[in-house]
Image 1 (cartoon, rainbow, N blue to C red):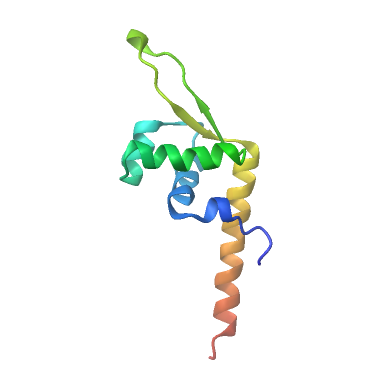
Image 2 (image 1 turned 30 degrees about the horizontal axis):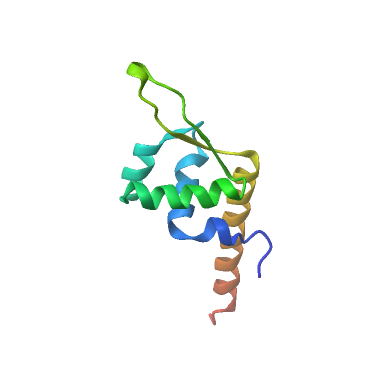
Length: 102
């Protein structure tokens, strides 16, 4: 296995969640759900895996009118894992290209 490759991050929905969170402070649950095009339950399951790994932190502040909204953000460990995973994927691509005959 290539150094930095992360099985937790690699799953398609989790990879896209990390990509969506990488360049922002936090993203609201509905935006993530709509961006992935999945049901609430699917997103919840994928977020739970990331939270359990210590890669994502969820906040549930009470908004206007007492409505609770869920916000997700990458933790420092999550950002490190995502960036390491991207580097590992780049290494895999370069290795594959080098292995091809000219």
